[in-house]
Every structure is written in C-alpha cells, then in structure tokens.
Amino acid sequence: MGKTKNKEHSKKKKKTLPAIFCDIDGVVLKGIGANPILIGNSHKSIRRVLAPVRGGSLPSIPFTFMTNGGAVTEQAKCESLNKLFGLNAKKEPALTNAHVNVCHTVFGSDQIQSEFADKFVLVDSSCKTGTSEVELAMTYGFKKVISLLELMALYPEISPTTEDDIKQSGMS
Image 1 (cartoon, helix red, strand yellow):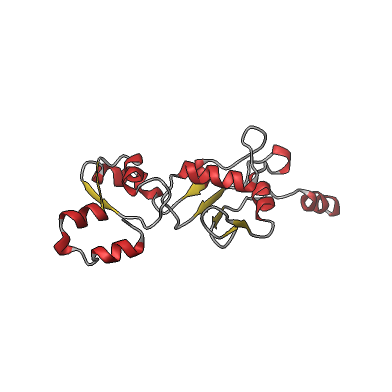
Image 2 (cartoon, rainbow, N blue to C red):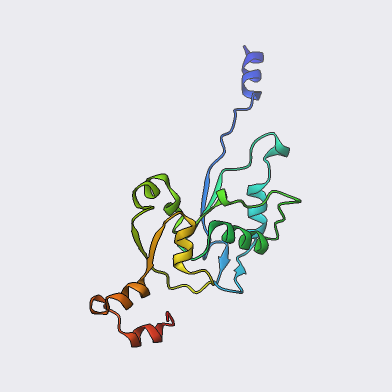
C-alpha cells in the first residue's frame, strides 16, 4: 500500500494555464503619445507570458491586452507595443493582433457588421493620431461613416457644441 501511495503522490497533475487579460495604460505603460514609459519589469513579464511554457511542451499562456484607448487599428497598436517591449517577431514570440483589443475592436464583430455595415454610422474621437475616426471605422467595413464634426456642420442647430468650443478643443 505504501508503494502505491507514493506512486500516486509522485504523479504530477496536469496544470491548467490561466488566461490573462491585462490593461495597457497604467499597468504596463505610463503616459500616452510619443514617449510612454514602461512600468517596472513589464517588458520582461510580457516576454515570459509569450514564451512557450516548459521549453515548448505546452502552449504559451493565453493572453490579451485590453484598453479603452483607441484611434488606431489593432495592428498599429500591436506594432507599437512590440517596439516598446523590444519584441522582434522574426527572432522570438511577439504580440499579434490576437493579443490586442482596443475599445473599438468590437466593431469588427460579425453581429455588428451584419447589422450596421451598410447603414450610416456616426463616429467621434478626441485623439489626434493621423488616422481619422472615419478612416478607422471604414477599416472595420463600415461603408457610410460620418464624423461628429461633419454632422455638426450639416446640422448646427442640434449641436451642443459651439464653433468656439471646437476651436478650443483642437478638434477643428
């Protein structure tokens, strides 16, 4: 009986891997714009999460960044993060689009596309990234996109914002 008990005890249970959902801003990066700063050893942690577990015998840990930041495509965000973390997809595991969910990722879902792709869609963004909110929405397959500024120009009487507000905000 002692022998059997030792055999059973020595058998390792198959461990399940946790899935990790991680915010970007304030968790792995501090600051936005041209010069964000890595927080602590976040770049080392990301490398570890992306690396195959136990020398490749198990898949890497299921991992996704989620952020309410947007105004860029998932691909652009992915490339930016890989650069910040010093990851080179040609030499090592790196982030892919599957690892990045921005606030507008849901726009690409089949449900949203089947219902709204051919309808007018109003979009707005307060970020200035070089990509307009209209262009961004169109990358998801929306065909009839109008910006908040375009709507306000067409119907100034319904706008809660004055022309002076727009100039002060830098949206013009």
